[in-house]
Image (cartoon, rainbow, N blue to C red):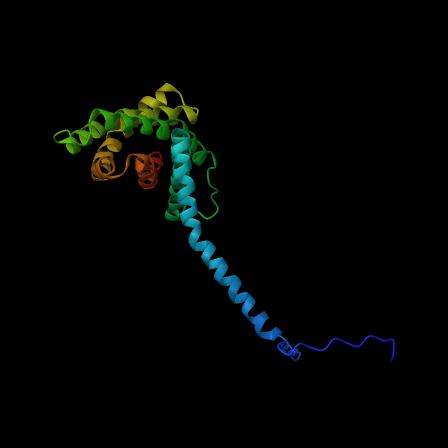
Length: 228
């Protein structure tokens, strides 16, 4: 007998070894062709989600820093309103060589940030508490409070601050008040009355400054044209 051990016999129930499967080579051309399409789909999905993310971030800032957020909103949109006013005026006069006045948007940004945003925030809060929606004729009372008390005072403040930021003296302010205050107030009553009726009665409280600032793009364009 040989001294070498014999191999153990295979169990009758064990399965045979499967044959080797040859992998098919990948079609690199098809994969590379699909990559740009997938990238475009991801980019489009990202662009579609961008407004939702921006709105969510803005709502978060409104909740955490309401006064600062509304002040920044008013400052940016006020500056944009003055910039658009200059662009329209330049196009109307066909002055291609005329450069834009950079100090104009800067003045409006300062006024919107330090005055329009904060004052409007507290005014709308005061209105909401003093004239709640369940008060009889609340919509009319809110509109009258805005149109007859807040608007004339706010317009006078606008002329005063702008006169100061432009470096003019008291006589220039008096001249501007005599020549521009009443026409501007009448235009405000004519244009802003339906806008403010919607704003103070139907726009949610946290969005009223944003709504008014968006509408003010055209209003500041009109005010800026008074001095031209």
